[in-house]
Image (tube, rainbow, N blue to C red; front, side, top):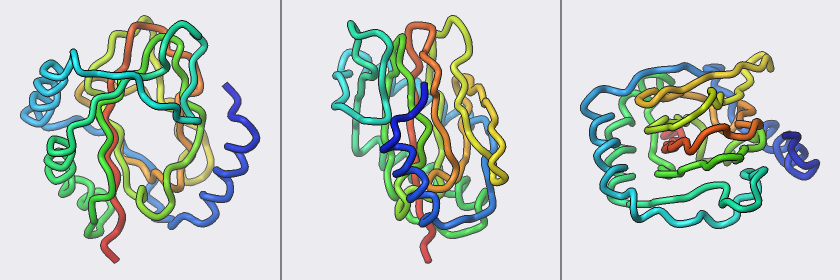
Length: 192
């Protein structure tokens, strides 16, 4: 799906102002105990998901469905951010401050995510985590590397992707074919 003109313009402005770390992105696998913690929390909260408020970057080709459902537990998010912080610091080579953790977001059949960049002051070093999915075909994350070359990255449950959220264009511009894809999103900013 082609992003609307306003989002393309906003993305260009944000990219121009965002810090550039020269890291790009990297696919990793969660430690088994951390992935088990995420799976258990997802199972525990399965009946508590609610339709997510309108997010302009997220749309759906199925007008009979909500594009995404959401469950938020601030204490769990803080724990997850703290547990993942050392890995993010190791990846980027800097001391980091936790900015935000969003999760769980369950994208539904027909959902797409326009290509965009994240918030420029707070979402500098980021990761997207695949917690669970029930797909009929892969639903890759499109991400442009530091040279502007596009890549399609398929994340399996238990995998996560480090990326420069405020700098690298990313999204899932193809409609989801399957029942759902559940993700969690963690963001940090350099301490300095």
